Image (cartoon, rainbow, N blue to C red; front, side, top):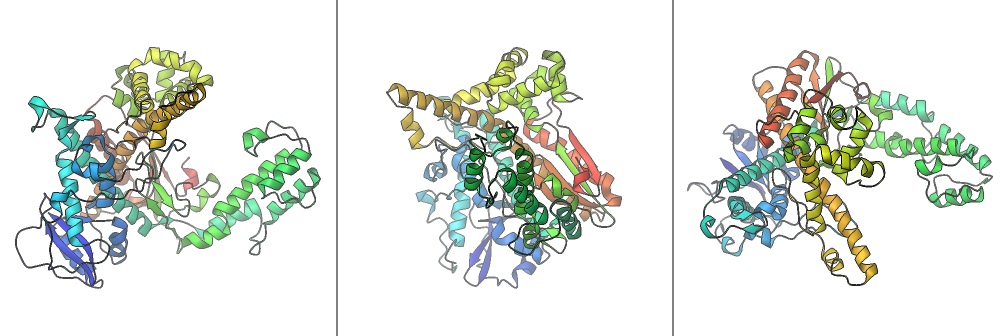
Length: 586
């Protein structure tokens, strides 16, 4: 059952749809629902276990959660549209062809994720016209029904695309086994992505448990007492005074990069940047206090008292996550730096009395995803029941784990010079399938083509400027073009692995959410998801429910593997720590 929730001048309207996107069985015309009535109406309809359809989860779900209404599933049309507009699996559908594409610009490794949803195909615009419904200015029910229908049509025709072109001849008009598999993968991705949007809203509503007094204590330990507004903390001011003396610059403001660089140069410290690795090459006595100042200044600016006052209320940190905020499918955050909780303040992330924090991360996720994608049986054997890097080291690097790690990460991220470049040939000899897989992805990118994650998220195409650069004629222009091609190759090499890892993580999250909901529905104590970072989740749960929550986390990880890859001989182990505060987890 599909229920469309759309904006109306008087609040909202709810319309039942068929799977094809058309209005449901004939019945009374849907009536507007006021904002005050909406939570009660939605709560009652949720008993029928519908899949809600709306333009953006963030437009509706936070208010419903605030009213005590939790939903099971949805389709977020904005997120789904972004995937279908770019996916190689739907590239030849009317929906994708009408979409406004985001391209990978010449200088960008991670272009913006925001997309304009494409208009519906021309022949569908009038199919769902409903003059009886008064519409809100932004997205009328008719427009949303048409958009959903167009997306369903694109998904239904995903089987018409094979590789980079449409099927022809004997296969035209009927699905091959590969077509069906692609359609199934895309459906899974759209469901998982939409579930992620609901999880993000739920985590924002619940919040990360945060002890403000512990945060204050941590800041005081590093920086000194809370200073008056607009003043430096005592420890920073002391370091600034020391720097002024050592650099013989009485008026130096070390927060100013320009002033700092001039002072360093006047003292014979010839650096091009103030990055740590470059500063450490100098033996000048000012370097040690400068590095200490920079470290503490970052803490004060990013997570100091101003951040604490702005972002933590009533013992909870509630950031806004941006699902699919990176083109590979990874999440981002909007404000508060949710994805960058530094180690210095993790002690403030503390479970409530009678509760525990379960911090779980997927060990070596991207390398293991590569093993599964490439179907490299020898590397799978190296990863079985042990540390992957140690297994690779035993098979091909004389037991040197550090070398094995450098070589494998270099292959995934395209670090083909220096130590990584030296070790890559050995890795390729030992694991030709795995290395060949990422090399092929790199060649696709260098040629201006796209690559696709396991479930169907494709990399953005190159920009027109990039394509034009590849037609250069002079020797200098050709060198520039080759450099840009290699850069894009590094992007696509990593995209196919990182994107597939994001697919796995999305399924892990959705499966874990489902299991925790089932525990609560059965009346058992259960935890709540409160934090997610790429391959790590945090569950805040009653102490009595720790064992059951750990089992749910591990079962969800196993289910995610089977959803993506089936019953393959590749392990996706999850490391679990049960702690009182986040700093104890690692």
